[in-house]
Image (cartoon, rainbow, N blue to C red; front, side, top):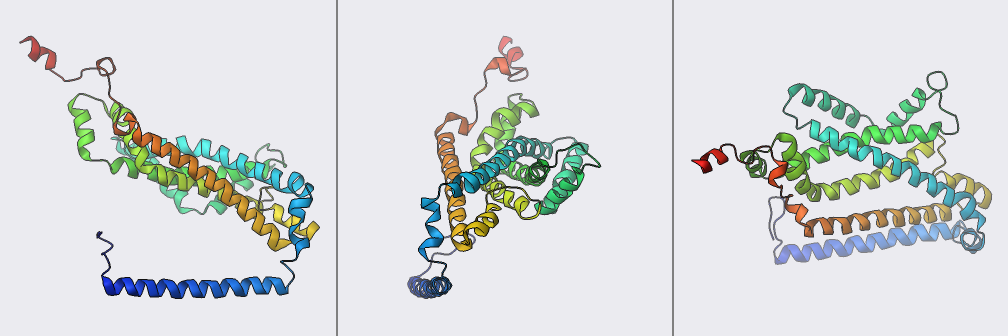
Length: 297
C-alpha cells in the first residue's frame, strides 16, 4: 500500500529490509548482553538487590505506593483542569471574533513555547511565602500541577483546533444551511465527530502529563514515584533494581490509561454520536429560514 510518504517496497527492497532488521536485532542483542554482563560484574543482579520488593512490604507501603499515589493525584488533577481549559482555548482559536482569536492564540503560543519544567519553577517562585499563602508542604504539589496545566492546556488547545479543522467543510456548511448558530454547530455537529479523530493525540498528551510529574520530584522536592528511587536506594543499595521496578509501574499505569482510552474510542466510533448528533426541531431557532412561509404558500 502506497501513500505520499511511503512506497510499497519491491522484492529487493524487502530483502534489504529483512537484512537491516536482522543486523539491528543482532546489534541490539549484543548491547543488551553487554549491559547485563556489566551489571552482573558490579553485583547489580544479585538476589539481595531484588528480593526486598518481594519479601519486605515496607518498601511498598513506605515508598512506592505513597509515591505512586502522589503521581496519580497530581496527574489526575492536572488532567481534569487541562482538558476542559484546553478545549475552551481550542474553540476560542476558531472564534469568528478576531480579538478572541488573537488573545487565545497569544496564550497558547506563549505557554506552548516554554518548557514545562520552567513553568513549574516559575510556579514554585509564585507560590513563595512572600507572595502567596501556600503551605510549604503542599507548595511542590501545586507548582507541579500549575506547570502541567499551563503547558498541556496549550497543547490540548492545538489538538482540539486541529481535530475540528480536519473535518470536511461540508459539515459546517450543512449545519449553517439548516440554520444552526456557530455555537450549536460546534457543540452538536463538529465536536462530537472531532473527538474520535483527536482522541489518540489526547491520550498521548495525558500520558505525557502523568510522566512529567517526575520533573517536580527531580527539582522541586515533590514526593512522586520516581523521587522515591533516592530513598529506596539509600536504604537498600539497589539503584538499578529500584529503577527497573519503578519503570514497570509506569508501564502498567500508562498501559491501563491507554487501554481505557482505546475502549472509549471504540465505543465512540460505534456510537451514533461519532457521526454527529441529530437535533430536534425544538433545539433550532429556525430550522430552515423561510421554509414555513414557502410551505404555507
